[in-house]
Image (cartoon, rainbow, N blue to C red):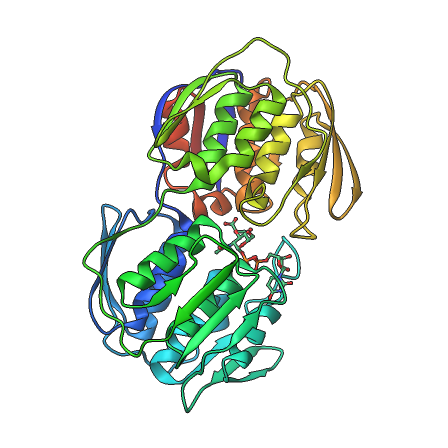
Length: 422
Ligand code: EPZ
């Protein structure tokens, strides 16, 4: 088991570059399976989830090289094998293989990804989309099986949930369906947009990218791509910005799209954090002024406040002078990290599975704490950066799933953080 040891109290300073987006890299790697040709994909983060997905693809017959954040991958044939549960359960995003395999083989069988600490995480909106495109869907407790012997036919689909991976799966399936598809209530996160750009580079015909209504004209052939560069990870950028703000640091975050985080900057203004926004950078500046609470931090679908920054931002609110309300509208199990924060001295009140109050300011004390999930793990590191004394964080494998060189980036900004084995 690996841990982080963090000695808090240092203001971060310097410059840091953001890596490629995990949530864009995963669906884009899956989309490469649509073609027999070679795809070269750049700015892929070297993180655990990417390696797990590549392991699954190798099992299915893909050949690839992955070095210096460049993936060269080719899938000449997709073996009609059921992806075993032990591979699917450690990577929920393997559900994004449903469409490419269905399109290549006219059938696919995948072990049910199941829920996780964030909640039940059903996939009914995915399956609804497939049925609307004419596929035959059968579900058992363990497996999902989808068949389309005559191929898929375009349809006018209103998604029952605004689901990110649900939208991504149905976009890919619609790209290969005969005729026109409209997807209404489509998710529009930066990673959904990046997937659409990659698909269009492969020959797809998607219009309305970045909106909640997509118009797709089906095509029958997908070609390889010579060089697609994955969009920067706006969630990592937001995590680094919050880390700088909570330590009252002076940090320039580069290689990012500030426009992807408009609502985060609105909340920074509400708290009273000085910052400057450039074309592809944001500069977080120090201040001695008191941080103000946020009346309501409500997570929403993009372009609203991202659920994946809810935990990191809540840690910042423990340093604000007053009461802030957290309203997590997407997941029913995403407030568990507050119990870890309370061990450090934070004052919180969980009102129900979706709402909590943060009463600040509180001096956080370094103690042993655990990461409950990927983003909560990052939130624990942020808390440790400002805590008095030494914090030991366990279950950091969660953090390694989604943040590339996380402790190296923080150390380069002056944080006292190191990884050790138990
Ligand atoms: C994606 O998960 C992300 N993962 C998650 O990021 C992110 O938290 C989430 O979107 C929301 O933005 C990837 O992109 C790989 P959803 P996804 O389907 O697609 C309900 C991270 O930390 N829902 O948008 O699984 C569901 O229960 C991860 O990088 C249905 O009810 O999320 C949940 O409450 C964690 N029916 C909500 O929608 C469905 O068919 C959001 O789920 C699908 C979803």
